[in-house]
Each structure stands twice: as C-alpha cells, then as structure tokens.
Length: 137
Ligand SMILES: [Zn+2]
Image (cartoon, rainbow, N blue to C red; front, side):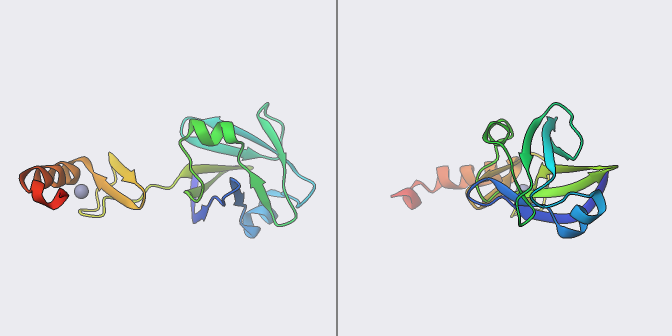
C-alpha cells in the first residue's frame, strides 16, 4: 500500500473529495462511477469494481458519501480527516490520527475535540488536575 501524503476532511454530510489526480489515475468518473465502499480493519476501501460493499455514485465534484454505518463503525465524525492510500486500483482511507500535542507520540493517542494526548501525557495532566483541584472551581 502506498501513502499518497494526502489528507482530506469529511464534510458535514459525510462526503470526501477524491483528489483529482487519483480520480484520473484510477478512472473514477464524476456522476458515472459506482464506487464500491467496503471496510477492511481500520481502512475504508473505495473501488470502481464490485466487491460486494455498499455502492455510491461519485458526484459531479468528485465526492463520495461514506455511508453512515461505516462512519459509525470506524468512529468517524463529521470533519474528521482521512489519510489517503492507494493499493493497485483501489483507494484506501484511514482515519488520520495526529500525534500527542505534548510529546508527539502517535500510539495510544486519545482525542477529545481538538485536544490529542498520549496516555502518558494524559496521566500527567490528570495528576496535575488532581493535585490542583482549585483550577476546577
Ligand atoms: Zn504525550
């Protein structure tokens, strides 16, 4: 699988724009291509071939709706970012996870709203809050 280095945000209707260069390369045609959308692990797979997934037509702006059931299963919320990968003729999307804002660690990062922290930094913060309960008043 190849990383494209492209990250795209889901809009508030759960749509994602397939980058133009990828649409060209993989022959995804606006208003024509029935995109087969399936899931493998933490990836969403978009294919122009029928693979038994859910089917959505690419709209006139090259967007495709990620079905709500898939968004739910993968914990994707509106405006979440997806990282785009390619594998042969298919597009793989994965929830883009930022590193810990404090130390940059990428594993075990917990994100709430716009705050992302790794467990270690989160524990430090919790300990700090516990020892300074006045800041909660
Ligand atoms: Zn951290």
